[in-house]
Length: 283
Ligand code: SAM
Image (cartoon, rainbow, N blue to C red; front, side, top):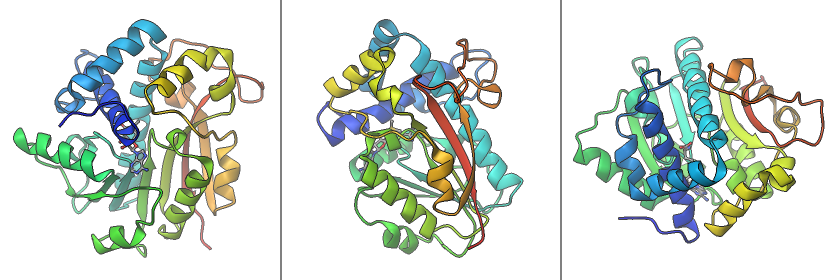
């Protein structure tokens, strides 16, 4: 199966593109992570996107994605090893292989949610090379705009136990009402003491002249960014989460890779890529 660029297939192609970026990073001697399946999962679609992005749009997107991957790798490992959470849910997992490449504590249960066609394609590719997960792992095909909590619970997720959630690389592709609904659903399923990580972009990332080539590129491919979030701390606090938010490139989200100046959030008017991690407070 190959993905062309129309509607939900274009969204699936974004997962091939991020996989292709991880494949490139995995080839470096000083790589921040190693994903031996990324090239296979990226396919030609992913590699074509990366070639186009790197040659026409500069390296910021690739560096940003590498930093983001490492940032959320560390977040998930902290939640499971330090905070002893044993249920992990990757929402819009795409071609992510954390279920195969991270050293999860024993008894970790990973649920991967994404479009059914994408997940079927991913499973077929991974099983063709005999990939074996490092934890208990279940994929669940859903449309995130629909109701999926029952399906997740029927697959063995227990909302009374602590969980850690990752919504990586997906929220900007959803309209704002769907983003807020998704966060409400995650909150309902999260026992206090659970963890949540996601990335978003601010308003200027959609409107600033600096961002225009990227935004036009995504639109042309039929995978436009639709929503932004300027203050994830507030959106999360309204739902009972205590959050820490950093910008891509700040000290804790840099890993020696981010070569550009990072403008403090107090300075208005700049496009920003934000990483949020949060813990659920008691009701
Ligand atoms: N999290 C992965 C990563 O960082 O590599 C994938 C990110 S990719 C940019 C966006 C993902 O969101 C795709 O895998 C796509 O299939 C998924 N997605 C977007 N809208 C969706 C929807 N309505 N239902 C299910 N999955 C969706």
